[in-house]
Amino acid sequence: MLAVPVEDGEPFLLAGLQRSYPGRRVWVEAPGLVAVEATDVSELIPVPLAFARQVLVGADEVASASIRGWARLVFDVVMRDFKEDQPWLLHVAPHYGAGLAGQHRCQLIREALVELLRQRRRHRGRRLAREPEPFSPAHSMLQLMLTAPDRGWLSALPEEAGLRRDIAGIGI
Image 1 (tube, rainbow, N blue to C red):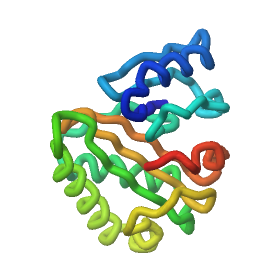
Image 2: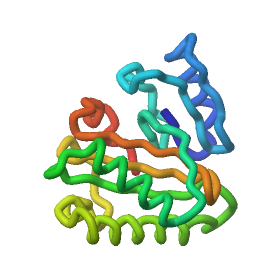
Image 3: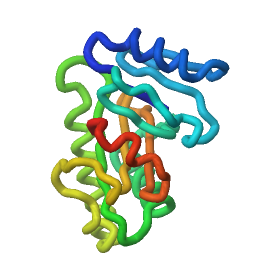
Image 4: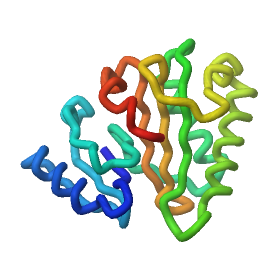
């Protein structure tokens, strides 16, 4: 799991996770990113998230050198993990540099994915929420957080994961 703490909340989030998961590795992945080692996402419940602004459950570290490569990576996960008729949310965000660094790259990744879905899986693309909307038990969710232009973390939370009600109030 990867968590983005609220402003000035990193030490509190880190301490809470360390207390909740003794014997698990809990570390600061980068400034503003706290990670918890888990072999299965079910091990992360209940999660103390009072100091988390965003949570990427079951996140895997991933890499790609190109916009098209990122889009293909996300496409493959959606095809493998999400049900055909399930509505789903996509959040692609940068967590590197200063200011608006990475925002344009994230937008291009999203646009490339939408185009890939349009070409290969139109029905699946129609189930993607076009505008931000609240996360609910009716949705699957995919989050990609770039920590550099060519590296990041990917979290796919299919509707059957059973964790959605536990994190539905957490922002994406």
